[in-house]
Amino acid sequence: MKRIDWTPLDAAGKAAALARPARRTAGDVTETVRAIMDDVRERGGAAVVDWAVKLDKAPPRRIAVTDQAVAEARSALAPADARALRLAADNIRVFHQATRPDDTAWIETTPGVRSKLAWRPIGRAGLYAPGGATPLFSSLMMLAIPAGVAGVETRVAVTPPNRDGGVHPAMIVAAGEAGLDAIWLIGGAQAIAALTFGVQLDDGFIPPCDKLFGPGNVYVAEAKKQASALPGGPAVDMPAGPSELMVVIDRDSAPEIAAADLLSQAEHDADAQVILVSTSRANLDYVLTEVERQVAGLPREAIARASLEEGRAILVRDLDAAIEAINLYGPEHLALQVEEAEEMVPAIQAAGAVFVGRHAAETLGDYAAGPSHVLPTDGAARTLGGVTTASFMTSMSIQQVNAAGARALGPIAARLARLEGLEAHARSADLRSEG
Image 1 (cartoon, helix red, strand yellow):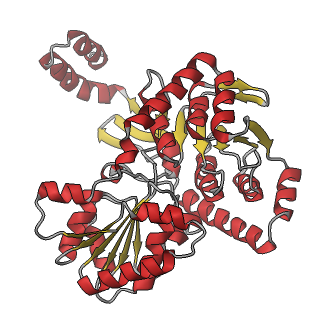
Image 2 (image 1 turned 180 degrees about the vertical axis):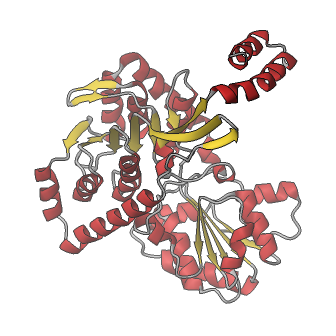
Image 3 (image 1 turned 90 degrees about the horizontal axis):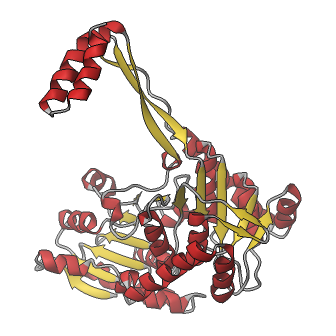
């Protein structure tokens, strides 16, 4: 991890210190994804199959999530693993049911004029869960469960196959917990293209989706970006690319915990980025020593070390400077492992998820605390939040006006319309107010 002293930096230096890995915006990624998207748009399912065979090493498959399939998958897991999945699913469902937006009450702004907001689920949601060598069944639940709570009619789940062209049983159990009827084994930009355009495959039809959700590697993130830029293309939840974690410590923080948290994200992806911010030079040194001790021998050591190459260890003067770095960076995950952690929260303006205090491990949020772990990356936390039930819904205003309300408000609307030079608007208001 690169050591940086924050205090002497100017604005440009601070921006450089917090720069994301260059590969996330590399031109070769953009061009490769564009080729895949264009091919699928032109050739449909045949193109998806070709790219899947080339990149996934297996053709697309539809796995029906039947009671029998779930029972067989559950029996392939240790009982404790199956129970953990059930508890995590229950917590996710409880949180999203409690935070599902409801229609507002009627609000009367002028006597006889009342309005409210009404919420409706979107029609089709495409759900991307990273898979392959590391099947993220947790991401599947973090997407499919809130989509179900929102009332989305069609949830299309895709995930890359494993090396054998199949899927980990935990993914099927997770799909069962979420109430899905199927999972498509297809990954990468080709999966996003299939969800964007809709394709006919040997195992069935993948419909074009209204909105795409889920985290992924740089190719998935770029494909979502290109899909949303198409005329009439799907909306997307957010930039949700390679993982990010910023850990803030002081002189009293536990180095072994901070190091473990940094590595928990570094092992995700070589393009993941971890940043340590410390008010103590000595403890910063201790954490870096502990990172080196803990990374040795990890099953994904090579990936973690590649990620650490893009990591930063930033020394700040005080917690105010730490908050400045937080809000400039806008981390996907933010761990506050300082004595004044709770007092820092009101000043934080940009973070996908905040973990307050040494016991609030980011890993708990990844799996079982309840809020979705699908969060904005690449600084998008400055303007966007993570996936919630509301992400799968739209709101619309409903307005009711009686005769008295029209007489009261009509002349005002008409005057404002004429002030803008829109006479037809004004006459429409006049007709209501004259009644």
